[in-house]
Length: 473
Image (cartoon, rainbow, N blue to C red; front, side, top):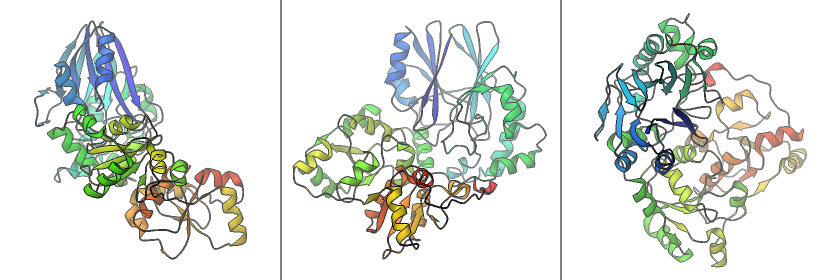
């Protein structure tokens, strides 16, 4: 028997590969499915099942493509009714995989179809729980997402279901069982997830606030609902794609992998209204970019920030990337449902420069340079675009919080006639913020390199020691 976690840091997402005696199962696969197929081929195994823990909101699963390419059966738990063929498993049903079994545990709460999969080894011992978004390491799945798709599923109703699922299905299991969740720290599917991506169930019973046996139903509801912030706008759109189906990843790649000369790129931008997305590093972008393009660096939390910043998943996109990373960008956009990349700038920004076409720039200064300006002028306008929880935990005295994840509200705080110095934690989000507003006509925004970390380490700025209220988590 083989169990492998396939963790994708950008999405803080865990997919799983299980193999026994020539048969394999994939749990919660990402959109690009060839790596799973190659893994099974290397083991001389046939993929028998694609096991889905629920209809995902934060990414588009590869379940449909994987089933079509391998003949595997897509399995959901009870209450799932997608627009494609599945095996709707019953609660307690046993799925045979080689010499092992996988038991279906229906655990509604995060969503109504949420299901965990309990692995039973060759000796009949329950050894691992693939817990989806029902149970994380340090947290449980937020019960407020399903209502974005189905209004009658209120967060109070779902939290009650989650309480029952945890106490009746999960907590009675052996302490020795290994928990393999669908997400870790950084995912918007929970609020208190650990950086660890696996743990024993016994340890979770001791440390996970939601598994405290002393909690009453009402106390549990309050604990899991307190401090939740609004989910990214693309979540319900991804849910619908996972339910209704989508274009094959092969078609998405074919559509997006069009190399365009500078002239053709400019013509496409003018004729289609496509958004120009530049995926280079923040500082490379600042030095020169195509006017009105948006910077979201591919080496950061790329896919989630694309989802947060581009409201229409059907928006046509033109890419500017470092050479050789064009296909990677198309795939990572498709992971969160952005399937309409229509081409990329061949030769990257260097080709644009060589063609003598117009470039724009963003002023970017170091923490030391900002300190010099502060010494000369105590009335600097400093914008901190980190999340509210980060800001309340620790921030520069006098800095104003304008969170990137609520950029439309934050934009209303800005006086176009004033100059603002913009920072985040390390310099990634501040460039997203500035480039987005610059494309909307805001000109007086200056990036602070290295973000809050560099400013704090410089020793030139007073930092608050205010502790974040629990409601801001």
